[in-house]
Image (cartoon, rainbow over all chains, first blue to last red):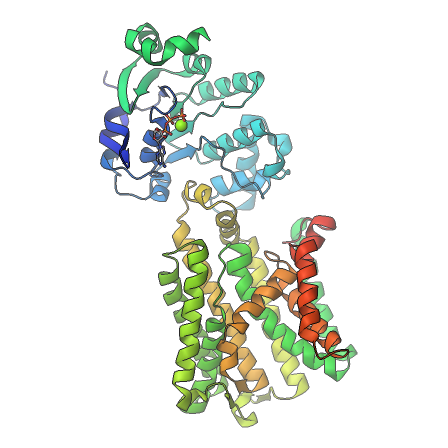
Length: 243
Length: 314
Ligand SMILES: Nc1ncnc2c1ncn2[C@@H]1O[C@H](COP(=O)(O)OP(=O)(O)OP(=O)(O)O)[C@@H](O)[C@H]1O
Ligand SMILES: [Mg+2]
């Protein structure tokens, strides 16, 4: 049974001045799976997902989403097609309430009907466990809660593809456990591309792992295959797993 | 009371108060309030762009002037009556803001400020250049006979007050509805974090253009109304001074609040009024008060109310 492809890149390349951040990346993302994108600092992971979401313009190469070439679409149009994106550095509306943040995320696709929107906001906040903070100003939340809020803003859009750039960075251990449970609960209906340094999160959530190193796709496979891969260990895994 | 009810009560309360003022206050203040309400519409226009969308324009006088000259010149040279002249004024401001928006929104931040300033300066020079028609700095007067609004004389104290009041009511209520609508919330989202708004799938550029158009058009309404009610059209209103004034009003009253524009205009008017009774250097006192307020209340008067008294203020 051939798995369905949700997104594909062909020769995706990004150069910053002389620096090659991503080099000719051919990659396919399977629908319904949780794919983890790992690699050492500066490997080019954020650059790669930035080019998927349209936040970063590609130097060269193509991005195909649901059989459609989206390489030339601006970011907001790609988001409208069903991509959602959380930033590596938390990006929320700090001056607005938590409720308002999520309402803005959900409100693009939902009609302005207040009740349905409120219900959706409440349900989404509940899903990430911060429903009791709905009326707080987002900027007053703790760092961990701000990250959860950003995740809620992604979820509220009911994306086909949810891209998360190091979502667990700065979360407490219990929050990480909740995050793992959340990702598992989404598995099946939402396709997830997760950039993650925490190997426990990767091993407990990912169906598929892609390893990026120095701007190139070093290896891909199941968690077991990747753990056993010698070159991956050399580049990255060994250090972190032992640590 | 729910928040929405409180907000409505506040706005209707303010309008009722303004209505009562006409019957309570002496003629001098009634005259002053007519002017304050018209200028508050102008401040509302700027507040939509600056206070809610986060785009600082230093050239809003061009929109005010577009409304003013659109009405004034069409009455004077086309001989049309007030209603179509008003329409021409509004359309002039709308078209100008569309054009300025399309060009200025290619830039951001300081460049946007400078580009709007340059455009306004161009309009000012155009007004002077065509002095044969506009009478330049000297300006021209609209006669009482030319200012009949459907048989209603707007040159009397009462006529002026009620037209200003009706226009201000419409603008305040429309403005309040706008900022509470999903459109208004998206503009605030862009002000707060443009990148996040874009990455939620909002076409930021389109929303900004819309904000420029609405803001410029409302400013044009104020300009046309000013010419109609006070019977004078002159190049001062296209000068940089009239781009800076609404900014001061909005900052004083509270940027990004619905009641800030009215408060700011009234506060500044009476500040200058009061200080000019004591000294001829009244602008110095006004300036000093401004500096003090910006130092100690950077969010303006309504901003203080919002943080200290009623966080629900829209
Ligand atoms: N805007 C930019 N201008 C210049 N160089 C950049 C820019 N963004 C990223 N880079 C460089 O591109 C390379 C890849 O960066 P990227 O942020 O994609 O890595 P990453 O894998 O996400 O790293 P991390 O794990 O630290 O987040 C790095 O060398 C980085 O310094
Ligand atoms: Mg990164």
